[in-house]
Image (cartoon, rainbow, N blue to C red; front, side, top):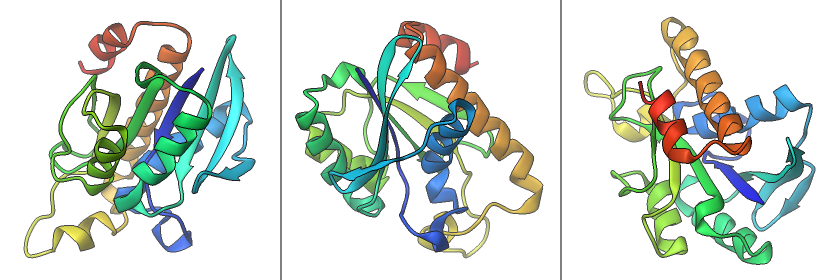
Amino acid sequence: MKLIVGLGNPGRKYRQTRHNIGFMVIEELLHRNQWSLDKAKFNGDYSMEHYEGEKVILLQPQTYMNLSGESIRPLMDYYNLDLDDVLVIYDDLDLPTGKIRLRQKGGHGGHNGVRSTIDHLGTKEFKRIRLGVGRPVGPIPVVDYVLGAFPKEEQEDVIISIKNAADACESWLKGTPFIEVMNEYNN
């Protein structure tokens, strides 16, 4: 069984913000496969499905970004999931909009959702897909920037990055070793 977690903030007002691009990847996977988040437990909304013979859980924590680990850890414990079977998807200020980067481990890079995940999992060694949202230009505070929507001129790049991240997830679910998925999608 594998777990794919998209980080974001719950609620309508955050729906199309940069910080919710992890949620957007989960929504793309749901849409492609005609699945829905039909369970609410562990401070999250999730779906348990089958993909090409692999059991998969898709999770959107409902704790708000800074407490994401409070949703991920209890779900992992309940389903007895191994860290090797967990993939976390989130926004990254250090990548330009439209770029994605896959890693098998790493620090939080100042991202509070990832910091919470690391704290609750007790390790930095979990698979991740980072989707670029770029850095603010000018005097915009980072908090306001990540809680803002993508401008119209970035929409096409955002859609491409979401589709690429969903493709990478599906490749991993089909049994492609994550290192090979990284090699394909990090180019």
